[in-house]
Image (cartoon, rainbow, N blue to C red; front, top):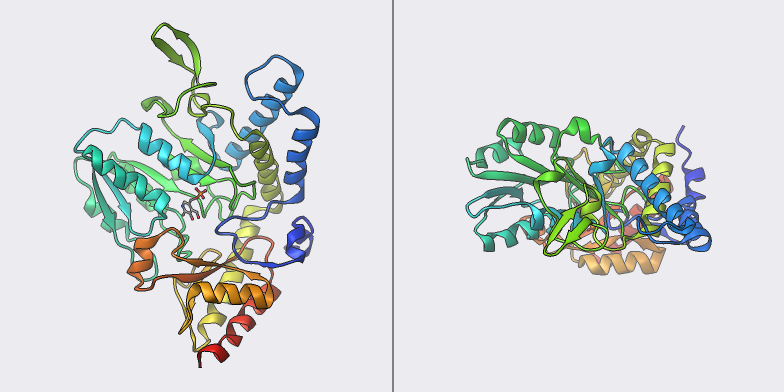
Length: 393
Ligand SMILES: Cc1ncc(COP(=O)(O)O)c(C=O)c1O
């Protein structure tokens, strides 16, 4: 039996607010915060750069976190790179892969700007980009991706779960078709890791970029990037920590993942992320997936029963429920929900302007659910949105 009350004890801010904005960033559990405090108070040093005890302990704890995160995603730790967020991971690939003019990339209109703009910018270097449209519920048909492939296609870049609709894409099928056609595939897992089971080995993608500060419950300023064949590219960002030797004008890079982590990393953040992932593992990813899906199913169903509310997205969704209230701007809805009931929801285009326009709206309100949310909070949300009809009728 999933004990949400026990989980909530580890997130003190939930006593103060109804937090329904985990798609933007999640709250971090007490054990992860304590691990970061312990770093600062007991052993803060730099990573991989010293023989003294604090540097050694820091390096060991940082690398332990890498093992924990890689194991959780069933990825090889030597191919698991820490970044500051999903965006940095995707940009690292876009800026470091050996593209040639005339190469072709297939992505989708569903993407967060982080998985769209880095590819669009490559057009300046002569790369062609095809953007596939989703259906009205935010689902990409893998056949449309396959039909878009040409003999110059190098990469498919696709989201696992849409941050606008909550729709789950058939990434296994898209990965298979990428394999079959000899094309690399990048999966944007910002909304999947920590919310639904992710097994990078069985998925078989070439790149998987995710955040530490979303479903993995780590602190802001952390992200994870998996690179299947790290030797095919040199990081666009080099410096301290990335080389084993420099002679004259020549340098020899360290192997992955070190060669992709230039400069002093977010050490406390990564250590906190390791603890946070242990926490997610302890609760159980299948339990979390079930819990979040049930809350969002209830919220979507009950909100769509209100005459003045339009809900977007498919029936089977992850923990993300976008909606609009007729006659009210999304930002006004979000402000009223906050001021009347301390409900924190996101409003706007969610850093995905093309797909928001595709819905023929300027913005939406987005309620999103995590392992610590409750049915009572769904009630509070639905009642508060229901009460808005007094303002619009
Ligand atoms: C699907 C998706 N991709 C990428 C991002 C960017 O993530 P980050 O803020 O970790 O860079 C987000 C953020 O919400 C997202 O939802």
